[in-house]
Length: 60
Image (cartoon, rainbow, N blue to C red):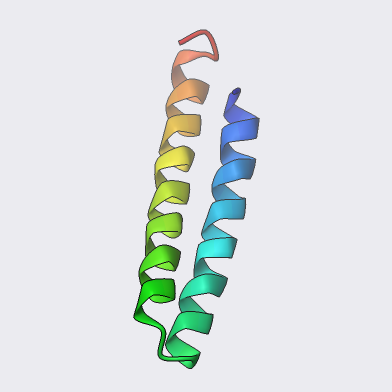
């Protein structure tokens, strides 16, 4: 994936993770909270990956 694609996927994962975490907290569902936090972390990692691709080029 290219820089832009990675950053779009990252944003999607961050939003979805945030929603999961909020629903998990509202329903007192620890598993859903943990899934949401993990998905947000995945989004952060994808964003970093996209930034590195942008700095070094998409050919890495």
